[in-house]
Length: 210
Ligand code: URA
Image: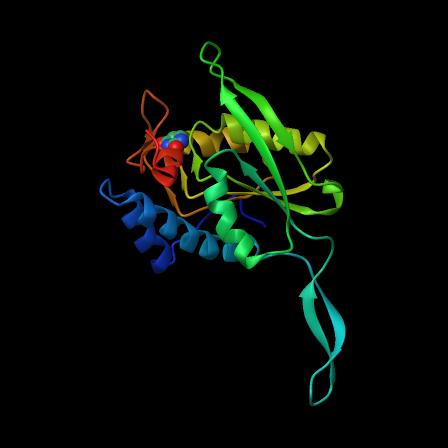
């Protein structure tokens, strides 16, 4: 992908995002909307996958038909909110390999600390798509991508629902080679690291916790 940042302005994406932002949207609706929106975002983040052709026969004649080239995609979910985006994308790309990265924020240093990491093999030969709905400070996303690169990944994209300018800047500084696809870029982060106007805590809203 040529651009570092792609904002998916499609009307369906924007309409669903507005419903997700509303504070009175129920957990069930939030989950359903996230699943739907993730399909539309997946369409955009996979737009430039490498293609090849294979020889097939239709009932009418033989042809060289387009097909996605290379090894199966790797989808990497940043726990726990990443799983909401992951579920929808897996409907579209059921054969993808899946990895998980768990990070928490050290209350003193505010830096991400890894507590879980399980990644697919042969990352150096796959396109990896890292998913996390909220690109806020960008610290966890940047750390997760560093882990991926240490495991050999070379061709990485980052998919989120909402991004803050601070997170985009952090990612651009740490991983300028990783394109970002998002549904919107909001105004800023507040003092607690929440995206403003945002949609609140994505994990809490999707899992019904507080
Ligand atoms: N994570 C969230 O879930 N929401 C934010 O606004 C920022 C980070």
